Length: 142
Image 1 (cartoon, helix red, strand yellow):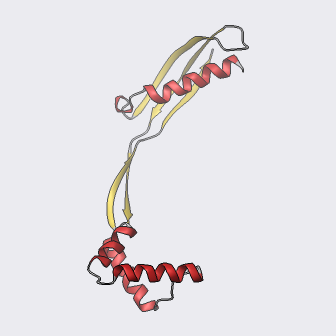
Image 2: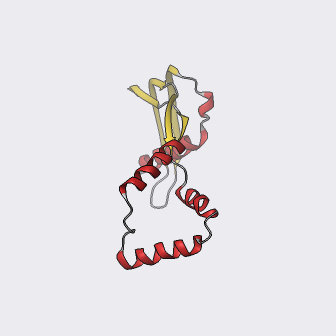
């Protein structure tokens, strides 16, 4: 095990779990930092590591985009079959046909087109916000 790699792997893990994204408003800041510590690992001599950096921390604006989703297929089929008097039998027939032919039974194109229109009308549109990226450009490494 390389001591320096172990050192940075530990810092990487901690960094992912310790910072509060809410406390980082969009923008750019010059950051000077020194990272130091001691690595003790089986098969390695105890090693002190210290590195200093100056760089630009850039926090990008959050991005909002529209997305749409179709209704859950299982929920829709259950809803359609809820009032069907022979729903269990209909499902058994579909399963039996599929087991024998490894495909669904053919249905007329006009029926498929009609259902496709219904599915399009049932699509939901929502806005999704993604956090802006965080980058750090090292200007000097001492």
